[in-house]
Image (cartoon, rainbow, N blue to C red; front, top):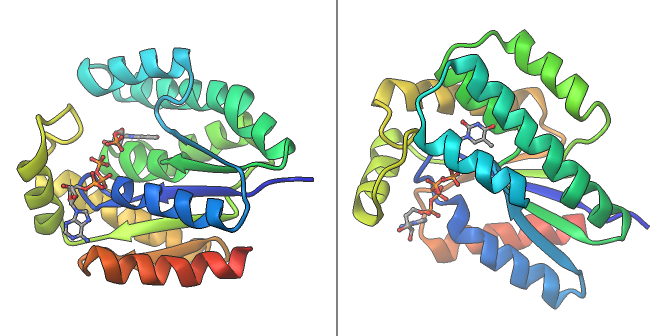
Length: 202
Ligand SMILES: Nc1ncnc2c1ncn2[C@@H]1O[C@H](COP(=O)(O)OP(=O)(O)OP(=O)(O)O)[C@@H](O)[C@H]1O
Ligand SMILES: Cc1cn([C@H]2C[C@H](O)[C@@H](COP(=O)(O)O)O2)c(=O)[nH]c1=O
């Protein structure tokens, strides 16, 4: 028995973390066992890498490699064993974020991300990727209202415009697993749409 793998994506402040709890409760109410995790992070080593990634300045290739190092550990320790045990794994970000941020935002060639993806997870892809999409100004307002900003969140509008464009390009490239969620709507409206999407996956 194999579980399902759902990833949550979007530029910082788009609202993805807000909906992970709802998706967890919805699936649990349908009898699914849920493991909720995040990237970078999700394992003890991955969380140490996350701290470096979110707070230290580093070469853009170092950043990409550490994202995939965290991912390798996450797959080995959390994603693969839980899917194999029939559990549903929810991850707050996965490889689409590396395409969006390291390739789209920072400008690393897409081919480098493809090579890392082919090395780290040649077979594994999400069953469903929920892309929470909002204009940059909305995301920025939501972030400013809530927290002390990390290294990525302090980037300029142009960086997030490129991240968002790459996310949307990936959604067009992989329509079989992406659902683009208009995250400017109310939380209640979004959750009603999510329930419809999830019903189809059950
Ligand atoms: N649809 C919405 N309408 C109004 N406010 C929202 C909506 N979705 C999220 N928010 C608010 O926006 C803020 C950012 O949301 P959230 O933390 O879920 O974003 P995120 O995409 O996970 O950001 P990050 O990637 O930086 O963690 C929170 O204060 C949240 O309550
Ligand atoms: C997986 C992954 C993440 N990032 C960036 C995107 C965010 O700014 C942070 C993670 O913070 P979050 O608020 O918990 O989403 O890391 C990245 O640049 N590349 C990646 O592969």
